[in-house]
Length: 436
Image (cartoon, rainbow, N blue to C red; front, side):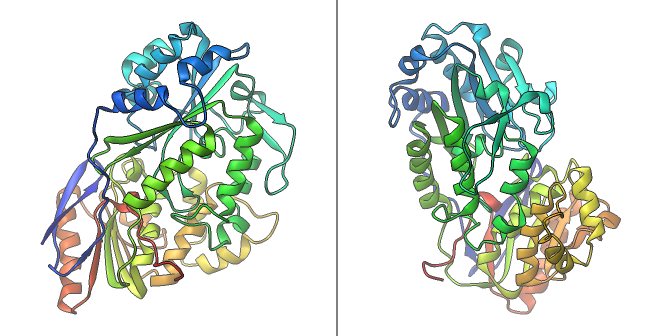
């Protein structure tokens, strides 16, 4: 049978055995446009009055609308203008609205990226700012402590707003169970120390820190506690299909809206593993998720429940922006071939490097299949770089990617391997059977 997977902005067509196990997203057909779905949700929210009504009772200060950064494929241009007009219909002036991009530890958005994220009309017409976790002047400490007993410092513009609205995409998340909801605040608008704790070794070592799990997941519990302390007046979560089209929107009270979106995402994007295959083929989500190797890790970690111990993973990503942050690149070079030492060293309280959490999650794949069997193909990196990234790396030209992956697959077929295929990469997260 033929399957199609994404790499960067391109599609890769491959031939796989007819008896391959294929895990696909199963989202329902959209019943309206993204704008229509979002407006319906804003006017009939969960646990809150309609947005236009709720925002009329705001305190003095800006209405801050928090949006995801460029690494998340939220189709804001299809609905954000309508949402802003809904806010303005309550008497909010144009210049009283601030769009705040929740970057976590990612870099601030460029002007070009602001237009890409929000749509040109919105980006050019409204005030837009990016969170900076390292800029002390933009952070303020809040009273109370988190689930883990820590202090909280967040973006001042959000904390001091007259009305606070968060938005996001809900899909499986390989650490926090599901994205969206509380993650707009933590790590999205949090200080460096909070993000370090959120992504720290103790949290990520917990077996419940994985796709599809909220109950008992320490990342979820910590992020939710931060969002509760900060306060969220209104939230909007969208759910999208494999074509990046909004199929449902949930709005209203923080936890109710997020839980409803998670229920749908779990049903549609978290199929149960039928059997552990000898090998699994997966994309890393296509653009924009696979723009860096750092983000591509999500693809080959999310597929791990579908492959047997000692099996093979074949994954690929565009890596148009390279490896990732400078710190992450250096970390990967420093621990090339020494990932087990890395896991021991990060247990020390004084040991922390930005983006170390990605290598810690990466190690889950290495523990199950080994570096030699963790194949990664990309047109975006040189072989010398791939050789230091704790994968069996294959640097190939974009036009040769399909043939290179096909050749590797054909070698597996010759050995009679049972193959699993995940065309949508980390957007589709197979989960072990209950109790496994």
